[in-house]
Length: 336
Image (cartoon, rainbow, N blue to C red; front, side, top):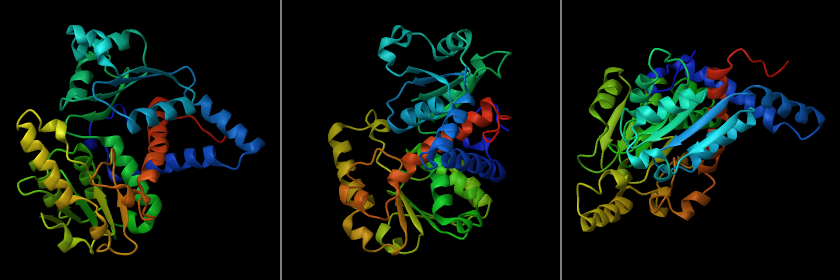
């Protein structure tokens, strides 16, 4: 079903639902009541990727993505190599991404999960594998402001578990608020929602829009789409709201520090999930954030029972375990 995970274009609706099914199976097996049978379940899970080696290659900081991939791999019995302080690697001496990839290929890695500040770095990693481009598997864990496909999958899975058939049948309205141009999590989520025909109300600063290609694909698919800068006006319509921080690291080289501080202040005021905003949303609407959740998603919001942030983190483990299993050992049967 998958050879590599480079972008959200590697998925269609059928593949996403297959990942959900596998993720739920792993989740149910792992979380079964703690008894003799459950211990057997967890032992069986560890047999899935026994003898496999997963490399985390992090050129950018990560908390949730890195640790959930690590937990998922170890839960399935894989060995994990963490390489995320690039100042202490040959990258600091000038080694190229391509040579680093070929090094792990020579060491026998089965999969490289990589995060990189440059868009399309995973495509360059794939090219570096040469003629044997099936090994190791390249998994994109975020490339610049381009895509973050596994984050989108866990977000969609969270919605699927929360809304059930209403999600699958496209009977929801999405609210997406934040740095529409700079946030790769939003780009990936929007493409995923398009596959389920879920209309989107996208809220962000003026002239801060989804990338043109993403916006065009949504419009061509005839999925409902509105772009606005007025968060309050549309607050009560969506069934879920997805917030994101201002991606300051994407802008600090193009504007002054003073301008960036003002931009952040205005962003939190106009595009944050504040107490006032939460009073305007539908009573049963849920609130989401890919993290790190900063001032735009304050502590009071995180404690709101409608917040699914903790569920998103938990679901990241099941989704990433499902992907690793489906790529590296697709024929393995957990129930034997």
